[in-house]
Length: 274
Image 1: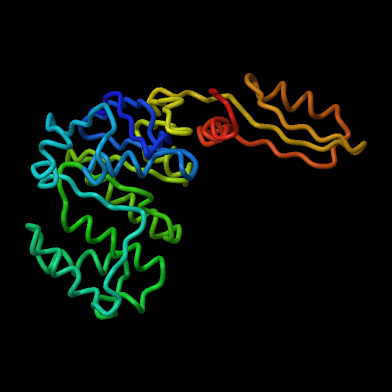
Image 2 (image 1 turned 120 degrees about the vertical axis):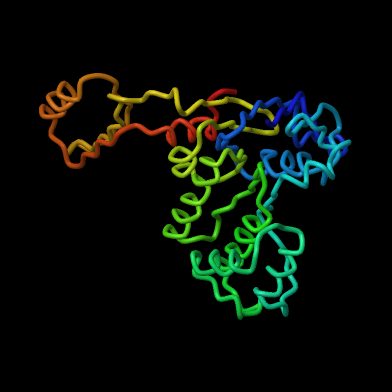
């Protein structure tokens, strides 16, 4: 569905995206993670032909992102991380304008506004950051399409709205929609994505198929002994043996938690994979 081949994007001598390749299958939720400035947003803007590639190519549904950009935009919905609105425009008027380019109806608009608890009668300037993010989400959903490209879609949302957002995204996936999204929320990436690419300094450092990841019987143990020593380590194996070992220590503090994919992502952020 989405093929990124040896994509590079330069700004002068600086490579914001450095020879990356991704293969995103139809009907999958594909995560894209990395620090600020790693190249996530630049990649997405190239995908939408908002930036021209310096070299390499992007193809979406066998169409070239540069040569066939207009056709791609007919079935692709893009949500940038930050959007500037006309502050004096009412939310309802903004959505009605969006409906001019969509097969959705005013009933769909009303249903989505109710679902996300958004007041259609308010002006954009009156909205909080979280509610402005809801405006972006609803506009994206009203556009619809077979491909959703979403840059930090849940930033600014409270946990309940984050869950409601992903409930809808999972329904889109069930309908065969392909979703490519970036996020700094590693827990939601682990919970909802099928596959994840980790980008660092413009390069892909790892691609993880979350359907195949197995971290069962792995724990992260942190403890402090009364003599002042503090220990943090990963443990693989029988948890009963771990408990027996810990029972012999004079502990002041102890925490045992299951290892998560999130902790693996953090490892790449901190320098793993270089």
